[in-house]
Amino acid sequence: MKSKRIEEREGERTFALVFEPGDEAMAGLRAFAKEENLAAARLTAIGAFRDVTLGFFDPGRKEYHKIVLGEQVEVLSLLGNVAVQEDRPAVHALEAHVRPTPEVIVVESPRHLHRYHDKETGLALLRI
Image (cartoon, rainbow, N blue to C red; front, side, top):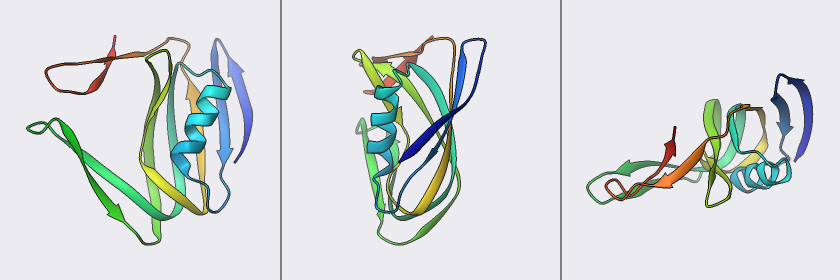
């Protein structure tokens, strides 16, 4: 994965990320968030993956139900965020292997978002 800071203004940094074929997108995003010490950010992307794991949260079971698509998919819109969980950056987005590439824009917020474990839902929720 290659990255470049493309703007910095009033405490907000914006980065462009380009992944290589075969990269695991979440691992790359986690490594980038750690390297840049991101505490609060949002991300958007378009591109393509050779496989992807989607999911939704089942509140009755308090766990994610994963849906694996083991085929080439086009990414028309990918949204996610980065927040601090247990003193390190946590990325909330899908798992996937790149082919040929997603192009990701990461915008760091000047305010820090932190997650906490909510016992009622079982989720890591944003603390505002």
